[in-house]
Image (cartoon, rainbow, N blue to C red; front, side, top):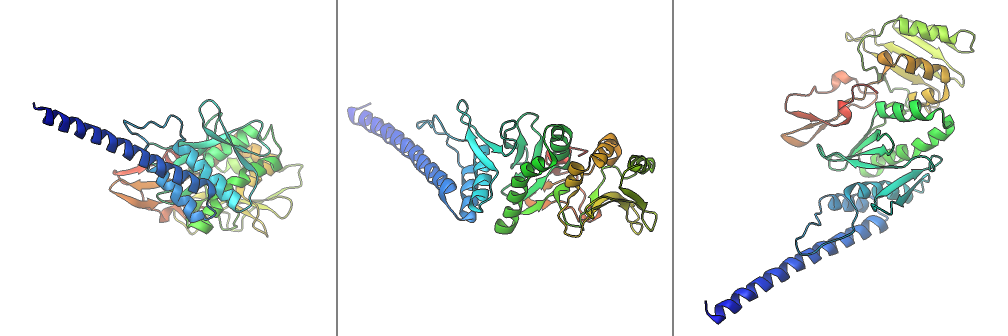
Length: 346
């Protein structure tokens, strides 16, 4: 090989190295710009766009290393915190783990006991907002499909089973409020489809049971519990269930639609101002909570599946609280369910 050829080959290699370094630096510049947009913009749409672009940005480069950078779960948490901040909603603050540089959320008044963050779903994309002791997936967020869905099972396990002995009902309501407000903001400002599950307060919401059949002895057990209390348990006019009349004009129904051939049982909460959810009833009324947990095998509320079509990634089907399950398309062999759908009971 001549000297000229050797010099030419060496120059090509230097140019190749230079180009690779330049590409890595360009990625770094895009990364910094997106981080600035995520942390500084006051426009919800720009906030969402920055999070989505960060989700698709790879910092892997053979010649330029980024020794410290945030992870996808951190961007989701920043999105949540910024959406709340832009709308003057308080209660949630973010701290950074000094060892792993992971972002964690604190929610008042549980800030001394629990931490929350997003956990990425590697199977379907999106992420679960989970507490960090038992990793209960309280809700699922998918930016691509623009959905947010609460897990009834996780809400009951974390708040009703584990926390009611440690915190008051009002404290636990305060903890769940930033999650509800975040969901409602996504729906209102960014056109997300949301499912509040047992957090829904509308009188039209029906919380369907996981099991199709309900032994009537379960209702009898509630009747026994109401003895010597101020609460009244009455049969519904069509003998299709019962209604428990609580205080403050709150009524809890457990019934099936007599005109529906499936006769699926469901809970329904009725109050004049539509401010009370089934979750609230479980928090506020120990009698109902104990009866529900003692008979959870039969009373567990369904968490309906969110289903992605494998060959049509843009197609998403989900059940909202007041939408009958019979109206939802059933999954076929080529459909993939999310982690939430794998949970059989709330």
